[in-house]
Image (cartoon, rainbow, N blue to C red; front, side, top):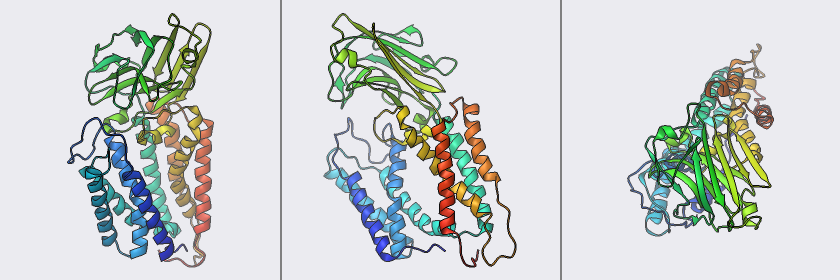
Length: 423
């Protein structure tokens, strides 16, 4: 039987959590473009991401405090007090940070979730086969909902309001693109700088967005990101093609942006290398084609004598990228992160499915394994692409699912009861 950690391990968890919280919340950052109201809950364009991550940030603290103090009220009060201290420091002292009601609610909620998990996790690890049947069903249904929800959130989506297109604009914390843009097409139709775009123009009837830009070199390497073409308004972004050093970055809006989550982008390494390293002069040109479909996000760069392209398959394994707090782009080489995300979803389903078939030593009767939650989860992974139009899981992502099954089985074996267990 798995028992609660002692005072020393619990104190280590609390200390490590406090250090990590301080590092993540009190480190100075570049000042925001505009001050956010302190009464907002989902603040800024990535307010959903901030709320989710602020909640997760305080979960380990709630775990450690519950195990250390032995009750639930004191840990929640301590978590709320720490949040008030952090928000006060962010408001008055730490440069570039904003204090908000959303942070207070998220951090307190995270502490409460940690306290709840401190109790429930031990019950789960010590669950009898009778309790495991019920828990397997609950986690199987939850996994299926997460998979299908992730698929819908990753689909291309229209903006709610009109956009205006800009060539080589300047934005806070970005550099001015030094190349010259000579033409831009959106879904095969030429568009000019500062042209107003209705939402329906961003996607065609198949949910595809295709942007073609012609630029002239040379293109120096910027110190920070430089925007080449962007479609946006004050509250929403339709798409962005940008330069990050020698790479090209393309980001297109997904349905998750409506919940203020991050829209994943794709990076074409060395996409601007020919223009940067002097392979062309002021008269040379380069064509950039960025394309977003329900199945993939791709970027292609073409010059008179070379071509380079990258394609990022849009699968449910990319759901972790919705919670990215930074403006970064990813590529096919990030598939291990997809696999790890899918393994995390599969671990509890595997654990309780196997536990449902394990009887306690004192039981005289065995129990059959509850397979339907396990099967339901696999069906959700297979059905999500068919229902939403996304790409099917790749071999590496299926390997992640197998890793989740194996990890769940290993945890179940380690925590299996070796003496009579009372439900």
